[in-house]
Image 1 (cartoon, rainbow, N blue to C red):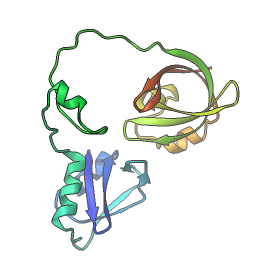
Image 2 (spheres, rainbow, N blue to C red):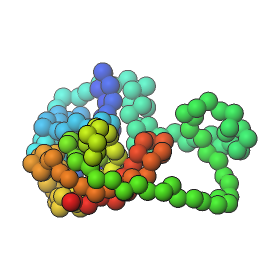
Image 3 (tube, one colour):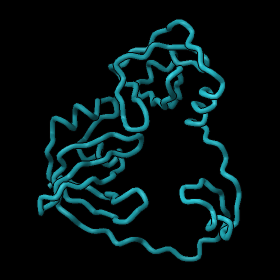
Image 4 (tube, rainbow, N blue to C red):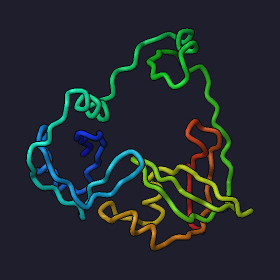
Length: 189
């Protein structure tokens, strides 16, 4: 379950990993959330987290709208390709077109040592040392990391991974995506 929370100082997306807490979460209800884990763009509510009722939290309409947009972003404007190319960098747009041809970026095989990590919503940012000793960051799908280290969905991935690092891995890297280099295959060495 994904939810957004708001209070007078800000908004935050939260992901509920402990389904036993779902009955305590209700839209429009004020809660006290303890023992949650912070990631880059959200908080994670897991088996160690607690949810309790609390006095009403007052939030202005603008902050409430911003919080709703974390879950339901506004629809992008529809533009043709010519108009899209004239828009500012970073614009969120909607375009309809025919895919004429595709080309896969060639994957590079590398040996890395995973030294650390940062959890993101669907990815894990792996901090790695390559064979020359350079430190680099790579994005990897969270499910690949969980499968590699045989992590149970109920397990706290932060504690489990911390116990097995550093780890030597063989990876296939797709370079040059908009979000940086991405690992699309990973195995222990």
